[in-house]
Length: 192
Image (tube, rainbow, N blue to C red; front, side, top):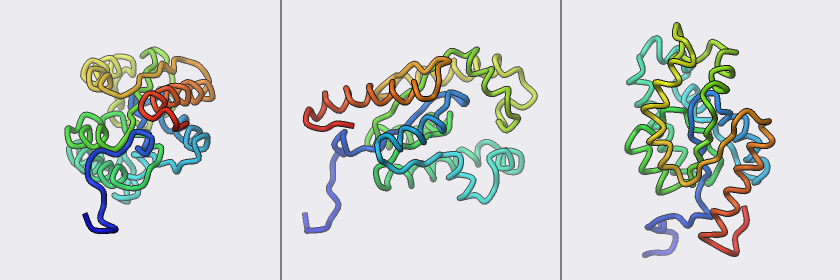
């Protein structure tokens, strides 16, 4: 391999991005920002990055272009972010359902499923009417349907952290501790 050429093969665990996955409303964005500060890493919110790339809100993308176009744009943005420098990434709730995105997450990130009980999540998402997949639907019923499809995929994450109804600071600590243990298992000399 010539000097300056990118290395091939899997990225060592301690050099991978940290990707937060889970249903909408579990706190991926808020917890992700705080976790990034704690780890001294940059932070990216997948939905904000999609909006910037499309120059439209997520709601407008869904309304004007449809969910399939949103998902295609989401996959392109996830690819760009995951192929970039190490960061904490809050993925959209459905991003991991895309097989290519899922493969990139496995190769380039440590994935953390932020799991919370559906009743807590339903209470959180009712506070704002910005979620296209919930418009005109009972939040708990919609989340239960999503969970049925998505939980088996979320369960493939490297780590599962129950975030329940506690404060975001507690979720940051729980994820940090889980990452420390994960990194120690793969690289004993590395700390998160």
